[in-house]
Length: 277
Ligand code: 8IG
Image 1 (cartoon, protein in one colour):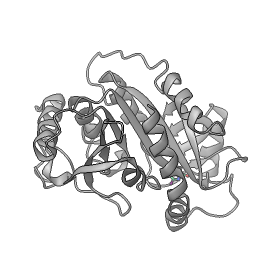
Image 2 (tube, rainbow, N blue to C red):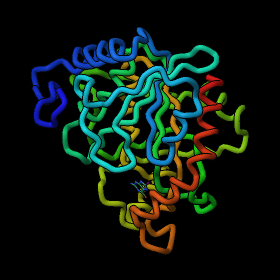
Image 3 (tube, rainbow, N blue to C red):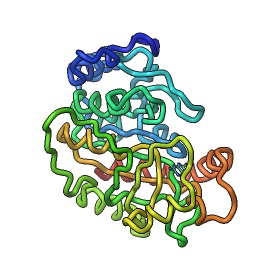
Image 4 (cartoon, helix red, strand yellow):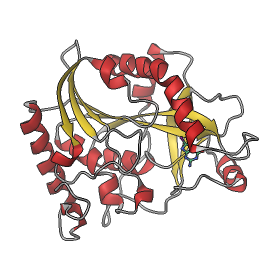
């Protein structure tokens, strides 16, 4: 299960929901927590939120959970954590995201979301680091995701499964987030395949078709979450303005740095929002 070359999801005959059920059973066994209420995927810049949520019941290496992959990237911690909030809510914190650009297929990309659903979670909180198209946004600023445009030309859904995506990013949950921080702005997340950043022309295209945020995750995950019946809340940390919006070239190092600087503030915000859900 642990090796990239030995993942049950790579068997085209495997049922991804059955693999997710096995993963949820692994989490229950390794954490001693039968059911989680909320799941939280921590993208770059959001990692410290886990420490602020409550008591860590268990920290599980992703490699010990069926179907999970080793983290491909520094800044992605590769663990699942079971946390109990002061209010008694069990939160499954996913620090092991598989990106679409890793080319392991969309089943692997959404496995953590399906596992969260199988573990009992009714709310999926998805966070990421992303580029901002709105000139008024500043690096280090968190924004709510109000909707998305999926430019991957792919879907986690298999077969004729016509899932409704109206209100995918729950207006109810966004309202709750704004009770915690009324200054939170929101925007439309546009998922590109990556791993290259966009050209300035692609950013202009995204802007013209209604996008405000550019990123490489989250949209496919949100679709899978909705398919699984979960309510979705999405946050982007704007780590950089998108190519051509900012005049200087984009650098991964700067992106990581912006995330690191913003981390304490946005992590505290996220912990307070999760507590309010
Ligand atoms: I952090 O500018 C981060 N992730 N597609 N574009 C895309 N993804 C990103 C960006 C960006 N910044």
